[in-house]
Image (cartoon, rainbow, N blue to C red; front, top):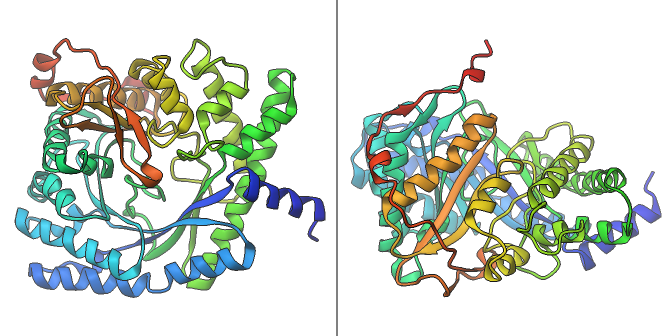
Length: 452
């Protein structure tokens, strides 16, 4: 039976605290689209996507209207394109990217993910061809997102892939320099990539997934922040309990929407991602949560401990609210998409080194960080290597989405617009890691990976 107090509380969360469903993402398998003819392959991909997700946007709008819950994004993820493209030519991979973009436009979704590759132990011919055209594909499309998994705890780190992704990010920045290097905002490098992630740019439809599936991501930093404010001057054990209970309520909303969407679309419900996904809006910031916990400013000493507690409490509360939790599930700390993170970087209190330390205890990694436009590809590769090693050593997902903004330097700001937000250019260490990066090869898996 519905409780009036619970209904009113949820209404307050939506109207005053920025609670929303950040995304309903339909995963679609493209394995049955494989063809030796590239034109036939593209036709089958377009037909499969547009038929499978034909009612996705309208269903989201109908649920939003019926329940009064904002659903910000409707998205699609597909089987990693390198797995279905085989050894087709680089030009054919660009043609597939444009096909994905066309399908996204037809459906009216905001992003489509899956122009992706898994290279944690090495490269196939198809993978090499796909990665070689990522910069051009992201330049020539608006809604296509790309991801590359370069490491796992079981396999170690493919440093040849890390080196390649450094140059790929650099090239993407150069090719989209006329738009503040926005192409890099659609490209992410992973360790231990989750295969049911509803969030972009890292979403793709994993190889063990069903034909189609619905995954949902919920956003509620403002709700958690308000709950902490109301709690007043309590101890940390009490605060953790408050965060758990709040996360439970947020996740129940996601569970409701996921179940409804799956039922109406006639596809399986996959997972609810528990991640607290911020926006540039005031009051919707993970950084402000940490400050409400007692930090003077995000980035000061104690930030990593506060974030670790927040992340743990969110997960404990969320797993009680849904039978199927997955994706990334935790607290996101994207700089350009979080008003508090932006302020902390601008004031000099939050450095890239501190952000890296924070990623050891939360979701994702170095996310949506604007770096100087003259940053070399070796430095970008080294940033990737550092962050990916945290994921491998800690058996967790980590990722890098950095944006070398061509023509801009420390002290300047870049504005990406919308949910991608804006960011000050963050300072980097300038000493060269080039010799280390150019060694190549693989960094072996850690000893604790041997668990069989």
